[in-house]
Length: 178
Image (cartoon, rainbow, N blue to C red; front, side, top):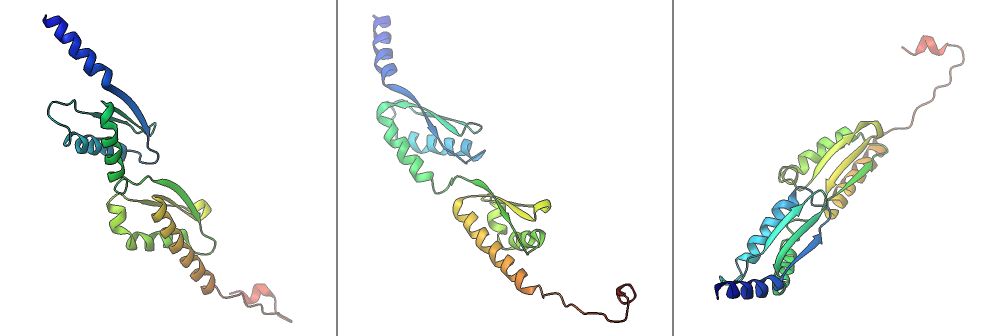
């Protein structure tokens, strides 16, 4: 009798559980914490007699692996929507500067955006060979940094005065250069 009961319970519960994968691009190592937060949020809503969900992250593949009962996937999607503003995907953007010095712009941006950088919401570095900023951030933050960079670039262009050409008639340029 016990074996029959176990088999019956196993078949009822086993058929309802499903494994689904969700592609979540651009989170990198934050994907693991995102998985934990989703799992905790959903499991606090699950009744004691119901099976709890499990959420695993594979940051290298940008995938969440979710095991849950069929009727729990709506709760999972709600939790993912709830946390999407906290865990915004990031991308890498290169911003090439024409007139401004990338190191100077980097130092200024670093001072202005210190809190966001320390919070891990963005990373900024300099590529001196191309006089560019390399930014890892969300779309809104990248647009903000592009706007700042454009302002610095425009200001640098204004600050450059045109060269003054002096025509020499009798002196040698080598004599007057010093």
